[in-house]
Image (cartoon, rainbow, N blue to C red; front, side, top):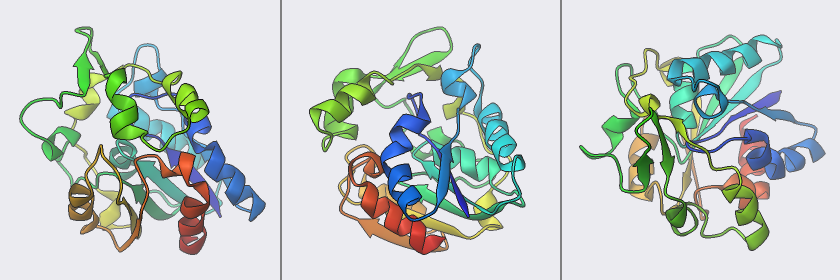
Length: 224
């Protein structure tokens, strides 16, 4: 069994975010890797469907069964990409489970959230002054410095693009509710989790794979 991690919005270097949990999994014999999303690291920036294609290419590279883990926006990607023969189960971490025809913007209000800033060139970023209080309140200073260095503009179109597939309708899924999350509120997570096959809940914030890797690894090991 392998684990493939798909990160959330407005960041790059998914391997850095995933490494604390990857190290725990490795000690238990589970191999894992992180996708590179064209919407965050491509030139020009890709869209949701390019992100999904990048994930499918990684899945195509091996016949080994995979746990496909999506964090936040990454839930949109694994929903689009996850109906793949290698996928054993989908794991959503404080994430979104869209149905066919639903976009990420459908889960918010009529206007973009105030924590997003549009650059007028087709990309958007998160307001850095809101990152620590909303997304990283449990990071120590070194972790936050690493995270802040990996913030990046993302193709703004991904937030309005509807999915054309809903892998969770065909593939078993687990939803990890992060009960201390200030960015995606627990009530919203629990509403999304109703679509999942199984639900786990932990007293963690938005990035538990960075700050509480042993807890996330235990959920994944149990799932695997």
